[in-house]
Image 1 (cartoon, rainbow, N blue to C red):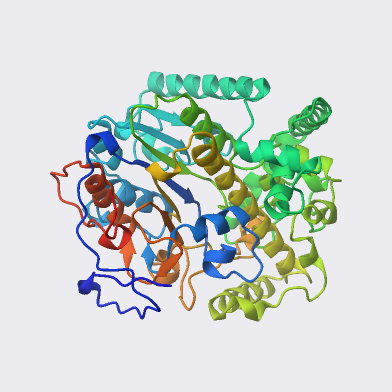
Image 2 (image 1 turned 180 degrees about the horizontal axis):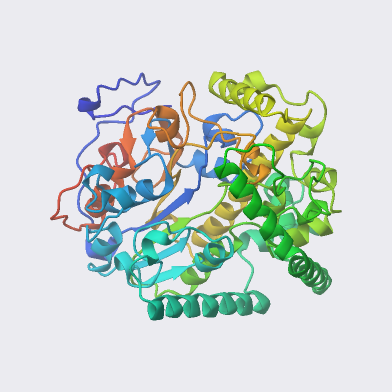
Length: 542
């Protein structure tokens, strides 16, 4: 079914197979029953969900389940065409042209949704990618907790120039010290092996034979990606971590030198220089990439974004239950580098056999390595245009894409989305099953902008793996203000919104702040460029 919109100024017409009743204004919620809010973003995530958007090859069991109980939109727009402006627009409800520090995507002292809610008694937390003007720290934008952001930002050299430019040397040293302490604390907690999530507990049971057939798609995924449960599994994982970190220490200088040379070559327009290989199947072209599983930026200890979801889970479990909460859970995946080693973690890569076939064979996408396994016509014209451009550029640069290269790139991307699906499913299993807060929580799953295009050149060869599917029929991609760069997946689960329905009505990240404020009964005194969306909150919302 689909729902109709009341946003007449957008001049959008949607033909519905059934109606869901008249849409009415939102009523402010009494303080005693104020909802929780959880906004989950994938980074560069396309329309890659199997059930919600009919992706021809994706496998996303947890997001499929969520879609069946959510309003699914094909008309939702991001706040910008790249990471920083889109996230800032989401937080403020303002168009990027209204930012006081427009050149730096800086929102200055504009009120944010977390500022507003904190002052009304909400607990506020941010977990994962930051990419906002101020430094990622407690107190910034009304955030009472910040977690899961520091280790990846420091390890990957994540760009924080805008945040750090005006800090003194002492302030920078203090931030570095805090990040080091947070990383040490994260490792200590990791070694303490916190209680398994409901999803991972079920996976252990399923792996022992209970309900294996009934729960196979999701349990197969969780049994592979959940933290090792048995003493023997933990021992093997610890050995793999130790070996990977030793290899990093041995090869780290050469890898950094190769990356620096490749970056300089790119800046000079030289496309023939060697790259640092993050992908899994290409023949190594440098002595710094001696093995399959070492072609990752670092020896990640666990699947990508495990630290983000782990921090969010720990916060949910520890928070006082009497106060409502707002949480950003902003994943790093599937942003480049899109690599299966990066997605599953290097220790698991080694334990799965350490070859392209063995690692991909442990996912639902190993069959894509077979000749002519992918029907590219099923992905539509926009993807065909992008792939044709990538092939031409590679040929013109003197390095044609090898046979099977695009298929492997797609397999690595879909495996990364598969890990994203697991992380979201793991998080929601705690929210819904363990804590029983699902019915009280306004849950959004979306992306910061359209997907990046596959491209054969860059500092690493992971750019070819950017295989996110743009909106059907849309042109453009990330970095463009065309529909392909602005339309994003959007799932909303809330007790007032019509579950199991779809809409093509035009909505935006700018609408989240005013809608959330009205639901929480919070007044917004400053202007916003979005508006409360009755479409998301039909009759019966409370």
